[in-house]
Image (cartoon, rainbow, N blue to C red; front, top):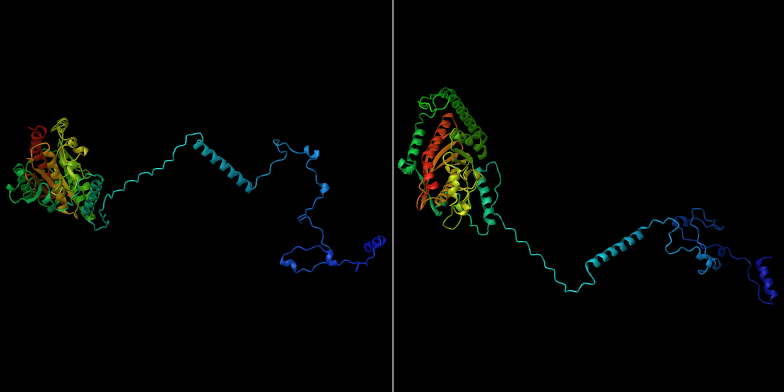
Length: 497
């Protein structure tokens, strides 16, 4: 029996008096399930009148709602056997934590660690104390401006003496700015700046032998005669080798007596002077700077001077400095430039013992107890300087060299005044070398001034005859140092009255 008929029969049996349903057929639209929204590409497909096919294995299964009869009661005793004890291990392997759970676990661990650190630092049982304001560290002292000197631009046309002067200015500016009680520095670059020195420096040119101090008059006359009439500058026994090299007449230059040197020594000396002559030509052609001139020409000449001469030694003192207490000043309370010369020929043992010098220095003021000279450079401490030498390249300023020699002489006199009477009674020989040309000068200490005396140009190293003349004059200076300066030093410094 069809459903509508069965329903109608049941209603009639119950005594109902109702009208029959209008239509026993249910519309097909109500029999279909509601559709889900599909992408636009699927919406254009025609609708099918057939019911949807069951889901495939790739379709997500639908969740089925359980009936109340299928749900176990929480107090069911059958479930108690299957429940795991609180501390019982899990029977199956734990699943790997997700990213969210890992971040949560890391955050909890960090919070726990920070809490432990706070508990360690802040003791809850400690006596409460007022919180003190944290003091800020004192600000660092400002960095002093060590130098405001403009560093020159290095160009091929920049004279080397200008660069050397600027380097010395920088070094001295740094020294003066570091010391809080240091005196300011005077820009001494010309001889005219010495007019305001504590002891005025006066330049003087020799016209007559009487224009030089008495203790160097004999030395000056011997050198001047040798320069104007160089008789005997070439030793006897080497004239043939010199003639072959020189290519001219040598009769006026050859000595008439032997000087005591052996044939081998004469040849070695001739070879060394030829090398100096050739190095001079090389330095002039290549336009080298002062260090190369010093190394290849001037040092080689000084080496020949002190060879086979006991008690004499030469030193390159370019990098040495004058002791601060001996740097001369001016009438404005400023210090002059702390400049050094390039070379020094010193007197050493066997002329006197080092113990004599050390004993004499013990009576000096504390800053000066380590040296007999204006500089505490180790080779100069116990060996007095007899001949002071300043060198300059061809493009160097001769006036700048005179300034350096003058400052050195003033500092040397300052040192000697602490050891003997004022003014100092000895004249100091000075040698100025400008590329290949050599010049003799003197420094004399007077009561109110210091004289810088320009004596005579005595040779050059451009030819072999000039090399022999320079060597002969330097040997005359060493002879004066041994005969005159050594006696004065022994009587006035080592054995004061």
